[in-house]
Length: 120
Image (cartoon, rainbow, N blue to C red):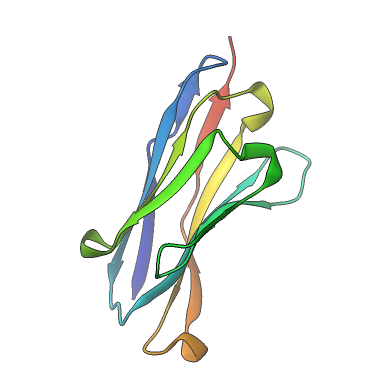
């Protein structure tokens, strides 16, 4: 059984920062890509940032220059550093990870989500 547990969400004022963490535990063969998605009320879930097993990163245009994704493979954890937060960043943030013995046999697992609210 694999579990992804997010932490670090909360209420922050516009311009503030938060750091989200996603810890993977359980029967882990190998973690390949990891990512963060978000879903605001009434909107579809969207990709925010992703990081490959080798450390290559990609970002949604709306967060480029403000958010940074990173990972600590020794801790089976990835992070999303969010700076210069805006009210439109308010959403439930979900992490995911592709886990399996080989990349072509990997399965995508999801965390339960953590609420981020940007408001004055």
